[in-house]
Image 1 (tube, rainbow, N blue to C red):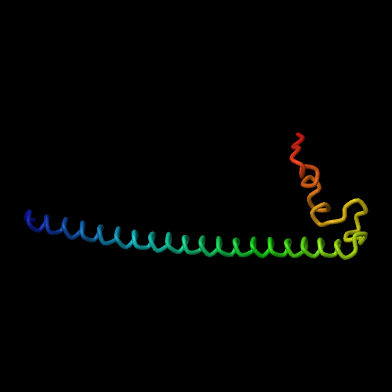
Image 2: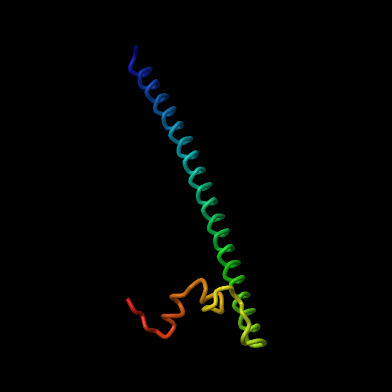
Length: 103
């Protein structure tokens, strides 16, 4: 076998290997892009859900304030000591509301 045929065989093998590497790289890039798109959609969904939850909680607080203005002695929750949603669900918030952080 002559050296020129051997060189051409090596060139062909190298070209084949490079083509395979390029196709693998393209597959990996496509996969990375799809993961990025999925992550962005998940982040958008989470942000929307957080905004919805905040807005619903704000509506409850607004309704509580207005009910208490209209009828101050109204019992909003079954718990006898607490009268608002924040007091029922976040008792530590009321204790530390004055800026006294006791630990």
